[in-house]
Length: 360
Length: 200
Image (cartoon, rainbow over all chains, first blue to last red; front, side, top):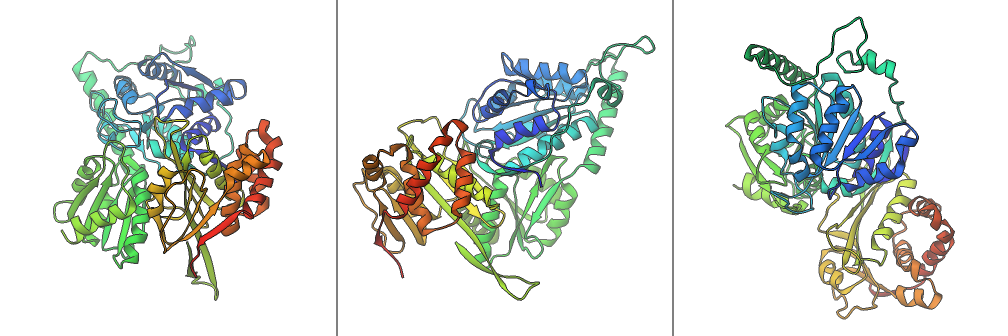
């Protein structure tokens, strides 16, 4: 068993990044995720593992430092909250285009604009539909606990390097700020230069005489060449959709109705299940863990077995579009959401299920 | 809440405990740290815990509250609107959380500064003169531990040896010399409760 600690989600993702062998963190403070950089600065991994921790002059600078670090094959990460992540969209698109691995953590807050500092899930579209320009996808992991904040830092780096693509942990202010028990995995040593060169033959690690230059770019002025780049990216995305779908089902075996929710909303729905089942209503929960790739087949299968689905999100209705696409038109699927930093209460969610799906 | 679950594979019943607590008062009263010490003590006893603060732009002097859940099983929602126990340290929190205690639940409050005392008849109510006692003993820094002691007397969720470990883990090393004062305060708190409404 690994080391047990009581940690905030923000601290857990930072500690896990050090333990995963991260080479560099570049970020700029913003509530509700400032503890990530605070924790890293307090732990001083640059004195132990050699991991760089740098406060950049802005989010735009952070994401471009990420591009540079990733281009040399380094295991790099940044974190921010909604408005800061908006500033990074250009860099994310460039990294996707240049096929660079990187981990981005978005501890979301209420929007639009500067919004609030309270939790929200209104950045779903931005994360899964490509907030930047061009035909790209980013693997999006949605933690629902502090434990998953830690676990997904390690998983996020693994997936980023496996597919040479940016990966986002889409969390929220509540998961970032709350403390829970975490079992930490044992530290993994940072890769040596030799290991990095062996693992990342695509990386700009210095040119030996016996091979050509490595060029890392997202630019190809020849449309035919740029189409080939796009076809290669799309083939990679199909592979990710085939192999990397992750989800969790709770109390679905005998469920007549299901909640579909990710992250914090899924935790709230677990309590709603207890309340509803005490009233004799057979409900379950489907929780997508990867928001991209989305668990399309699994939701389609579940849709054949149940009488209705309520998609619960802390936004005005974003993931529901993907749930409806997956489940088809024959099933009653409605949305229940709160916005701007308001968190729905478990009994409120049960009433929504009763009014909008069961009685509606 | 304690609930009974039949173990399917063995011929006995097991008790699964989940306690959902709100601790609320002014910022600076040690509301968040009381919750953290309780939660960390739970971790030390290998229970599942969650600690969810109300966070916002307000700081010292404003209201502060934290939801702490200690359980023998995986915790569902870390955010709740009904609680097994409310620990209340100011009037605003009384106005907000007296009504949020589940029927049959527990309310503990420090009467210092309270002008409208709790009136519900369907919950257990105890007062604890923690701030007075802390002032008398010169232990004002561990006022929150007196209150925690009162709670632990009524709901011994965590064993004393794990509270000790929880204190060691929650307090920075430079404050470890205060652990004996904290433990003394917990013991004092256990003897300070005044029952005001006790259900059968």
